Image (cartoon, rainbow over all chains, first blue to last red; front, side):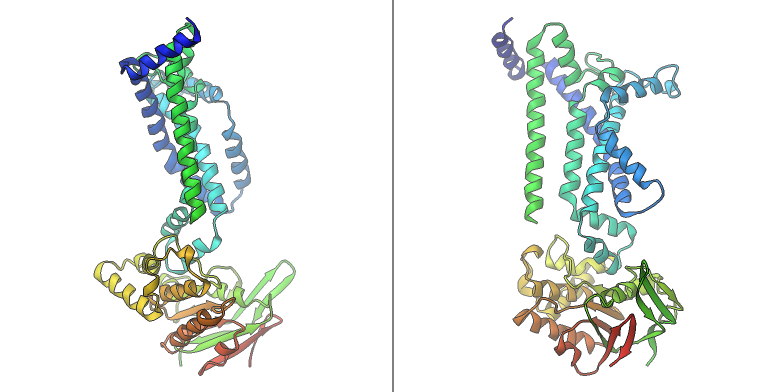
Length: 231
Length: 213
């Protein structure tokens, strides 16, 4: 099959409402979004605490967070595989090769991105924002929420980037999801599988969805940065 | 008059350099003070310490006879920055911020905010994003945001710095109103017009010590 034929077939699959293809897209979005929902609260809290407080080991935690940004997804997959496999410490939970395991993996991948962006946003925030909140009688929680609200565009950029990493990674999803059709097969693992089988049409179709998602994420980021710049 | 805030001594150093070395301080309720001093003399630092925004070596500090770190003190002392920070929300929401923090809601909050807006004369700025306000307008909104909380002690850091013309005149008017409002007011500034306001007690900060002028 030529590249042109494969691309034509890919468009046919996309716009013909192919249930299998759109099921894969749904699984990808579900796993990435739920993973993100799990990663954002602890990520934002950790980033805020790292930015606002000085304590022993803080610098090591900041370096660790920055290192995790570039951590290979297959290594995260490998570690999770060992933890979740039948012989592993969490084997009894029977999570391996389930969507829950993939969600866990993508939450772990998105977490350091959310932490790093929040840390950078809060550190770069005008210190008068927090001081003003405190001086007007805000307690620690309200002052923290106010500071985060004042830096919301930069924090949201972290959330969107975290989503970008989760939806586009393949290593972790493949290792702990197992690429089971209709259950744990997402866009990236399906592309890898279809390409290895020489079935390029579905791979191209899914690739196009992924590219559209990536472009959408970047567009939102650009809009947010524009909005933040106008404040 | 009773001392609203008092302390036995206050020392603040940066490394080897001692910025403040006050042997006793008493701020009376209903009295307005102005603190002058050269650049870097420690005027802003003193206010920030009294507001609880900076640490210092302090002994015997009391606010209304109680702990200055207590919730009562924290809610009755308001500090206003030299260049006030306005949250990225409406002018009315900025003024309502401290009321929300105190759990004051509904019609009461709305009434207090309206009163503060009228007091500061910022009604025409309601729909202007804070980022678009001039320095003088920001200062007036910040003073309204402080005033709405009816604090017992205002700490104002250079309220007319970098202001001129109408903005400065309006800010001085508001400062004067605050100074006659029954609360304690401590103002760090160089502005001759504020220093010479009636009833103002003038202290000069020199070599880390406060000297009454």
